Image 1 (tube, rainbow, N blue to C red):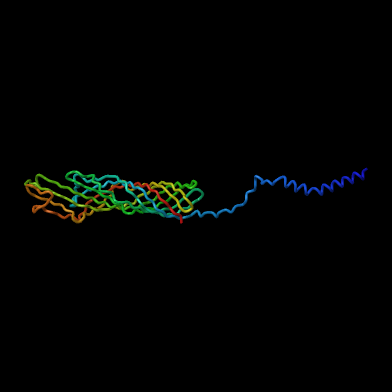
Image 2 (image 1 turned 180 degrees about the vertical axis):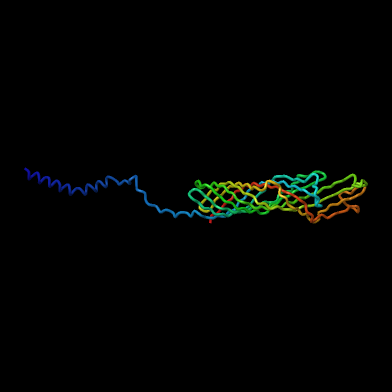
Length: 301
């Protein structure tokens, strides 16, 4: 009995061992392989770290608000007494502006610090004839020569945006031209005998140099690895008081006077005496203020 049971057990194990590979192949055919939902991350090649220091150059355009107050203190004869009324021309003009900038930056984490140098030009103002009443007409034209400025920038980086402030110094040279004309008729001369007429026409040209503090706020957006666009507002703070300057009269400026019962107008004829005032000096003073709005692009190099 025991011998038969043992023989049957051994035979069953042999049959099972023989059939096992076929059963495994059948299971493989019946049950397709399924890709597991989770796979360990593959190691990726990291890009080399960016240099935190770089430089850039760019261009900008915008608008300048130019405020001015120009005074004249003496006559072309060099007298100490001023005209009556004293010439005082005030106004505000908005002028188109174009310029260029170059600078370098350094980044530490999300903070940026850098230096920027820039220059810009604006056209001259149209003549401002604030004083325009008989017998005086005085028109002022102002032209800003190319300005230069250097400033420190500091800002915070958020995504592709840089929000920054800047402070620096700006050097400005401003040319001021005054076209003055007045005609005065007096009933009695100082001797009390005959009436006379005085006619004046002269153009004064002078300029002032100024150094001011430049303040700015702005934002810059990185378009790609090379290009960025920015928007910025600046204010240039110069001396709050009028700055004196000498204005030389153009050649051809004249003053004439005529005596007679019926003075000719304008001064003409044999009884008119002319005096050439070209080369004489007029004492003037100006106070200027500037605000700038600009947009621009920079290219990293």
